[in-house]
Image: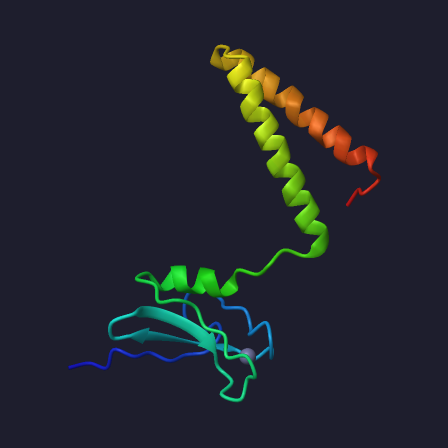
Length: 124
Ligand SMILES: [Zn+2]
């Protein structure tokens, strides 16, 4: 019977894993007998010892481990985008049109959004 656990660090196989956000150590990925794939900090003296939930799919566990909170500047951008999408949804509901017209309207809407972002002088 083969061992179900697999321990390896960082980029040894498949997708690269980010280091621990608390101690910057490479993570370990382990397949637990019943809980699936778990990625956790590989440094046994890490103060926080973060780990993911168990995932059936190895890549899902890695994706969960690699997910980080957005930087403060990105938060505003994401909120703005969400607001824009809500506005677009209500626009679509208020203006049911055929697909071609909707594509054109969307392009104009996106252009307006890009122009609004540029006006703030936050070009990057
Ligand atoms: Zn750590």
